[in-house]
Amino acid sequence: MANPPEAQPPGPNLLDLDLTDCEALVAALGFKTFHGRNLFKWIHKHGAIDYDAMTDVPKRLRAALTDHALLRLPRIIHSRPSADGTLKWVMELADGQRIETVYIPEEGRSTLCVSSQVGCALDCAFCATARQGFNRNLRVGEIVGQVWHATRQLGAAPSNVVMMGMGEPLANFEAVVKAMAVMQDDLAYNLSKFRVTLSTSGIVPNIYRLREVSDVALAVSLHAPNNALRDQLVPINRKYPLEELLPACRAYLAGDHRRKITWEYVMLDGINDSLQHAKQLIRLLEGTPSKLNLIPFNPFPDSGFKTTPPAQLEAFRQRLMGSGLLVFTRKTRGDEIAAACGQLVGRVADRTRRGARPVTVGLPTPPPGDGPPRCQAR
Image (spheres, rainbow, N blue to C red):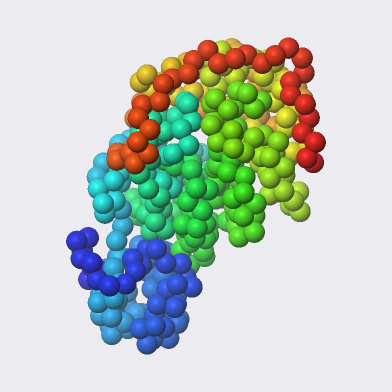
């Protein structure tokens, strides 16, 4: 049998290992590397966590794994369905921290929203996760474990995985990249590069790094068309402003004309939703292959923000579409179970000691004119 959660044998958690790691571990235990492939396949493709079920893995290797490794998953402690079919799982980690994972079914496809950190340190003004503070990065197995559980619960792997749950994926770079590689492995979940999306608030150096080691789709939490407003809504912009973010995104797409950056834009009433903001956004994204997702703000207690009224949102969308941009309004899913965008909170023992952040409301409207100067770093 695989080790129970309280066991602590020397050696790794097998969920933290990719295929190469599994082969190396098996070789180090004195067995041929192809047994590592079988082990990896049993865990991810077949969902086996009982070594005795791994019938083509030698008994001696199974015994060695019992002594020299463990197989630990996050534990589902709560499963909550929504009327629209959305499912939210609360998962508890070995140290008692909790994260949230959301499954969104749609006609002909399904999407799993996966967390990468316990909480988030980036402090975006409109995000419930940010209010919880930050504790730590997730390990590879804690990220992949969310996909493992979803696959077992649903009877098949989700058709799409988005790294859009709790946390900033590019702030947990190595673990997230390795976990996404496991998701794409044909011996595991067999997701194509078009079916795994990483969403970032804009850690520019790691966007360049990501291009060197991964080919997943890229989404960026934009939420404002100019630096003055984005500085307040997405504080990482103060370190990596739009003049640096846009060139990094264009570089990520270089050489692949089939792909676009997906821009996420939460619609906040009276804050970032005027036609003047739309005009600025058009100029900002000029020259960058783009798909724009407009996201109605999902309220949470004491947020200080309101959702853009539907008529204003539609006028904003029409102005953008009139310029030739590809624009979608994201349908709110799972809001009654706090599973919608920006609502995931888990349970976080905050290590940042920043305390409650005051809510900023009445952010400045854009100045008259055509918006910010065009970015010169093409």
